[in-house]
Length: 263
Image (tube, rainbow, N blue to C red; front, side, top):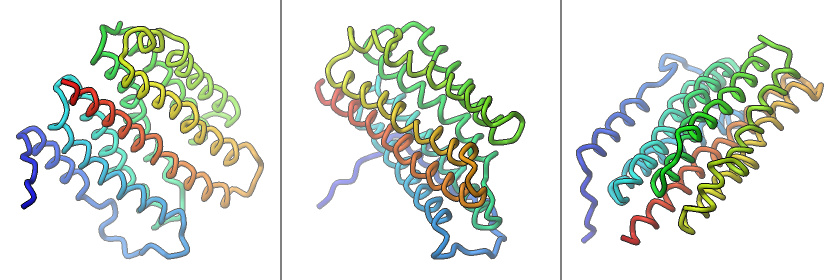
């Protein structure tokens, strides 16, 4: 007989909130259906369902890890929950209108990307005393990167200067996690498992996040057909979120479980 895990009251609450947040369709009255030839729409559906599954997984796994790791898993679940809600809206905008849901995407990123940066701080704080300056430097870099990208994509600034601003914010983040104080704390004080997770996370920020400026460049700066660029840009952004949100959270879950089971 299979013994099911008993959920804590807090986890039941988190799952209930997740279910409530994911149960409201964006355009319930819209009769437009997803076409089998709409590969952009299909990519929106695939990532939205993957985000829902990831949210349930991260919240359920909170009861498996030690107390100092619960916040990290909660943040991972919040990232995928927030992204899933926005993806429900974005996929309906695309299927109904065929237009890029830029505003929804950046609202999502303005919440979830800072939370992803918080994860660097949280996994280090679980094993060492981390100055708050690390947290704020990661936040500043994140906001500069996102605001620059939005100003360009929304048409408030020329796409090239906005691209440069966004790249400067990203470079600042990379400096902090590869050569700054966060990197030094990881190298000098973190156990092997945490160091491994930290390294994987910063390579996701390097390689995985590179997908966004590459997509931005080909979508807005390459001079290609705007309609085709828009389709390609959305598929690239959607697939990138699988790596940058779900895989990022799985890495944190893995180190949290490993470190908790040592006790």
